[in-house]
Length: 430
Image 1 (tube, rainbow, N blue to C red):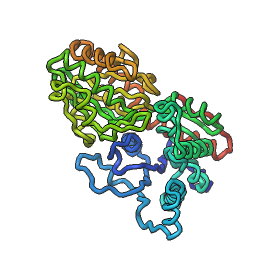
Image 2 (cartoon, rainbow, N blue to C red):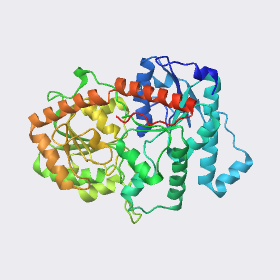
Image 3 (cartoon, rainbow, N blue to C red):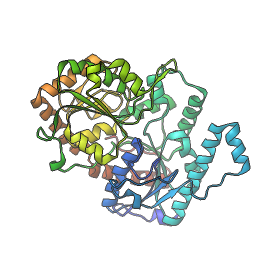
Image 4 (spheres, helix red, strand yellow):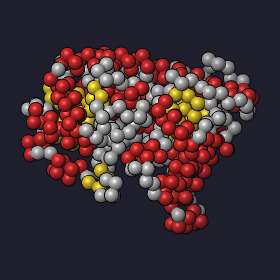
């Protein structure tokens, strides 16, 4: 490691590199870029220098974005011209070609950040095991961030049945995680599951919750801003997010509350059943909602963050019905505005939500229990206010961007020290 990295002292400005799958930060239906948007904004506010690597340039930049488009970023697609051999490789084995070409290009871009901007540490998601190639080529520590290892949702949703490509990706992600300079996770649940799957991690590890920016009090949910009966669901229509459970629950809710209406925000990926049959959202709605309920169902598709924020303020209740989550941003963002929450206690969710204390928790795949909890929120305004207020207080105490950014910097400094001295040490777990 060069003298430029060794000479930096605790408390000084850090230069940090990140890989993000989307740009600007928070664009696309992708939790990783959203989380990085929240974290990097606070890190910059605290004086640190942030640099990004992204696969491709955006087609357009929404005027509601927070200025992240002005951050220094390297796009992998710039000046990329694959050789004839590489083109043939893609035709013969597209998965292998994509993996090797992408990790080579990420590693080269990261080397450029080290060379041109003297970054001290680089963080990348565990996806495809790209972290292994980056770690091998950089002279600085590389942190693998466990946003959602491939085996987790597949293990939870497909009875442990994996395809060849699933097994290939799971294997390479395990190699990358075990060879990273350090591993961080937003929840103890995902870190423990990774260790059970791949074995002990000798590098420093830390549990650092995902960050969300605090919303001004005047912009928070309140009984006066809500539209009575409005139920908000934000998430892809797929097997993981539980949109199908929400739709079936709404059929029951509509019978009990004449004012109830459901707003469904997110892309229609399609609900794929274990036998491989896929249903799109319109087909599922027509099959599972009564005519009366369909009249009060509105599909809004993907929306930019600032429009979703307004919906959170005006919805009577926000529903998260996922079958598995690492540490869901959709929960944190609802908590940040004090929106009353009904959620499923899966993955890392119970590490921030407690039943009857700051939310109502119901089992996944249970439309009846979900419907009962939502109706209770709609009909008991005192309960909604109490749970929403407590959720915001808990988020401020545990997941504010300021707190998470400081914990992140503390962890990075521990990793740099451990890498410099050659000693692996367990990081923070709070």
